[in-house]
Amino acid sequence: MQDVTQEMINDWKDVHQKVFKTDSGIYFRPLKRNEYSVLIEAQQKDVTGKFDWEIEVSKTCLLGGISQNDLITEAGIATVLSENILLKSGFSVVEVEEV
Image 1 (cartoon, rainbow, N blue to C red):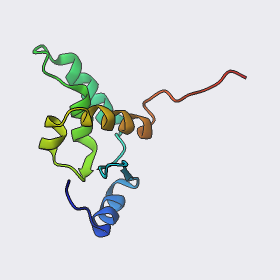
Image 2 (cartoon, rainbow, N blue to C red):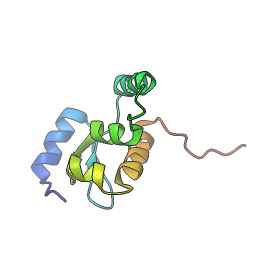
Image 3 (tube, rainbow, N blue to C red):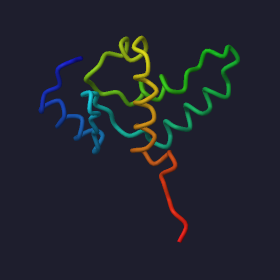
């Protein structure tokens, strides 16, 4: 894991407004609508089958706490991180109940 200082967090907040931290100390920002659209388009154009949605979402929004190399090589991190990114960005379905 990479050390993250309060100054770094403040700088990220100045740029991105919202910054989130996982319980394992990984910092990320929300995915923007235009970034989401770009990733969807890239996924649709991928003819090689090598496009990895979870890794690309995670790489786009990762701020600190882990290197991009570790993000790619450590099992499960990109999956959990991308789910959290999409949730905090408003792109995931949240639980709702019928009333």
